[in-house]
Image (cartoon, rainbow, N blue to C red; front, top):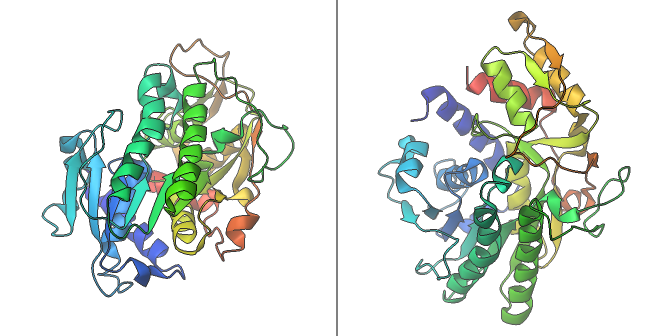
Length: 355
């Protein structure tokens, strides 16, 4: 069960997203499917949509159908939403070769996917199928509605594959991925998912919107997430020294969740269907070593240190081969989006939510 403090942080974050200058009224009265609803990004999508009416952003409530694999886990993720008339849960496995029965909907927001390399090695099938089979099934379900207005596919920066270590990545800077590797289950799944979006957009005129988040963090990440930014944050939550098993030189662009979710809705409500958009904060670029120093430095009263050790073998975690993943976000900027939360502010907010 979520603690009251983190629910309070969620509410503040949702208000910040809803205060963005976006045409929210176009969602009024819509019925919207959110997949991966109990996950990190999905839970923010659900909470935002259900809050738009009470926050005065839409004239009629948005109805949300949340698709989850484990309905009991989902109920624990949303204790404050229990009994809401506009919130329904549907237990469904997007690995299944079947089309879910979702009834009349206007939008599908597809956020269901493993996101951490920690899980690629132990569940590669469960990583690739929701992005391929699941995406196809959801498009088929949306096609059966009489008023389909949009499909949002939450892709990933991993689609860029092997690119220059120095260049910032624009949306057409695609490198290579070796498909005969275990880690490719995620990158190739996201690539195929994007291609499925383009196919349904072209052949059936379904408005398909593609967003490519980079390294998104915030409250709602799990302690066992396995990605370095989550590990470091939870080290501080648990008053543990940060242990680095690398030289810390890899560079990433870290984006607080409110900026990312605002970017997703900017694309959905103002973007061009059939066009991919990077969603990230280039100003949040840090090396792994700099990130460790940042989160330790935010809480000097804890007296934590950074320890560097020889990397231990880890059979489940599959490291990225890329030293720098930093985006160009000019397409999103052109729609009026700007990041608002710095890494210092965002990581402090995340860590405070758990303490």
